[in-house]
Length: 439
Ligand code: GLU
Image (cartoon, rainbow, N blue to C red; front, side):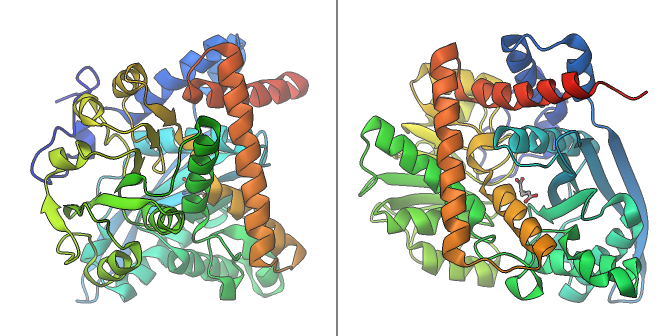
């Protein structure tokens, strides 16, 4: 079934995960979004053609030995969308439904994200099609190392720089770095530390990187609250996804006095009208792998989650989770896209008609790649910046871009997603005009 014409998917079924393949083609959706912004800035058709496709689409199939001695084949991806503003940059995700069109869309969003925030990076995305929950830690290490070896010199600190994404973390990045270092050879070993970002601090990562995406989301919420005179203290928040992004957003929001009313993830949805303690929930998720079964809240359905009486919704799970049904159900004042591409275009129209502020992914979930840029700079300079320094820089950049998008959207009378793309596209167009194409 193709849902490209019927974007109603993730219809509330009892905590069921709707297969990604049934959610529509993500690259087609990304193209539709970007075309609106291309029209707005009168982008030259030749440049639109170049940007409309990724430069490179790499698929590698590689064998790994399981703990039981058997060999299993894995399929890995790396899509390099564009590098006119700097090296390809973007996450590596491990997911059983990973596919090429998804990677193409996600890689293109990285290009626009970096362009919007004026980070000297291009866009890339990749990963492996498998369910990491079904594998032991030693298997995960072998899978990660063999994938890195299969990519070989297709990645590199000045060429293409992976980072964590869905179901990957600092440990994944440290394995990738170590493998790449060993392939690079003894004399280059310490100059290639920046081949990946999102590493642990001890292995050359940056302070503040782990919480950076959640932190960036919260900076956008804070700016919005300031602009609209909204009081975050005591407000109600619902969060979908409790991983790299959602768990930190929850902690930082509760520090501002927000009440976490409901949370959901792949295992199910929970709610507590008195508020959910994000630290305790974090411990539970760490142990059990999901928010399901958390003692400090009651189990609810996916349908009930979207209809909760909240002010702020942070989708921080997978793409295409907010369809028409979810948009109709949501009662919030604002939605801040911690995930990449969580919203169907048709659902966004409904949200905007309802007067719900939609803060788009490339604006608000960019804290990760911004601090990745700081990590990369620290690696190049063999420096270790202090936490306060990193967080201060991140805050200034997030707030600056937020205000740029706000002003652009007001001046052009357009939505914030289109405004965000348009700013990024103008930068890309400018450089393409200046440089031309080879030969
Ligand atoms: N995976 C994150 C994202 O989608 C971070 C990418 C990075 O740090 O390169 O923005």
